[in-house]
Image (cartoon, rainbow, N blue to C red; front, side, top):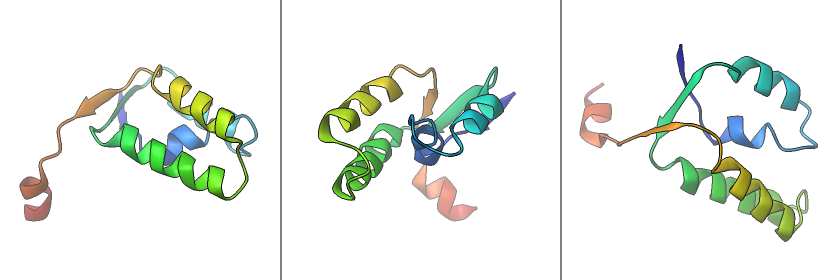
Length: 85
């Protein structure tokens, strides 16, 4: 089965997140798909979390690196089609 995963799913698996285990369990064995801007969204979210003091710079960089190793199928964005919907 395929599910759409956004940046919030990736941030939920950070070590200190309350919903970490639930996010991992809910996506285990599934095919993850996302718009191709996902890495930018993850970086933006990590930057925000770091500015708020929830992650150190080094932890944020490590989290981004780990997120890039998660198997996900990135899909091209079709803005016109989305607007039509």
